[in-house]
Length: 308
Length: 98
Image: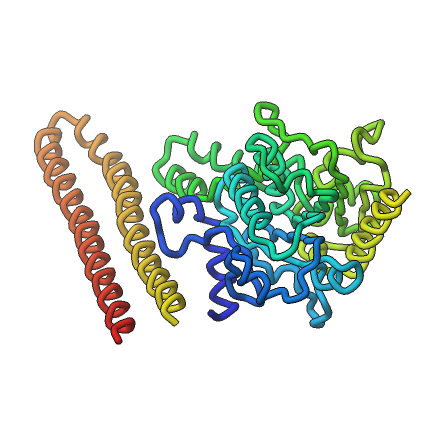
């Protein structure tokens, strides 16, 4: 299937994915592993065929809103984060594609189920799972860990590290602005502004969930202890005040770092677990050499700590 | 081959359903705006004693005609959607036949 079509479907799913899923529409993307552009069934033989040298360490990569796994691809064709982690540290990369228009919690549950199936069908005994989420993917990772904890899934204790790349942990101001605008338009007693509000409110639940991230006071999803959490955030500007305000253009630095840069203390995460990349925009975070170098360093640090 | 064909057919059916939904929901949304916009001058005229009665008659006829027109648009969209869906299913079955 042409890559352009998959990209168009990813955008459509991001915008209307909850509606597509609710109406049983054939354009709705279901969560699945993708290998070289094609679905990878979670069956022992299929995984062994796709990864003949499957290792006991697996890195699972989740894309962001309106993306597919191609978001990780470097423009110059050099190996992406998954392939680099495979070459440098012996991880087996698995890329997950999903309907980004669904509620984040629902995608978290689906990811938890998918990883549970993976544990049961992986061709060699799994020793470690590493989760890497870009943008919304990071929120899905956090949500999946909680779903796995509640369901008692086997994969959760295998997770040593989770890397959140450009993830709006405290939500996106763009969605909050959109929410305010549609509310304002709906409140004006005019048929045209109400029509505009109705059109705005067609946006998917996945997008609407991005407004609060996982910081909603009624649904707290704290980072689970027992997992090393690493946060990578970007800034377009090197000026500290502008960087704090605009972040990587889509995610402000406080949200990308889960509030750690604005707190007096670093809370649950050591300072070394949070890295800000100046002059790296949101999408570039998913395919940037400096981000990969940091990701590799985090993996090696953790390995050294484990060895000690 | 059959999985790919099945996925392709599913997607064509999905696209047809999405276009049908867009026309049906779009027609309903435009109808609401149309009725609300038309109500404004009717309300003004219906408040004037001399022309209130004929205006009410015109208002009722207008609303009935408008509702009927938009309902026809929705009906045609649903019928066309169902026909396209059947055609895709038939084409998919034909392509899978040995």
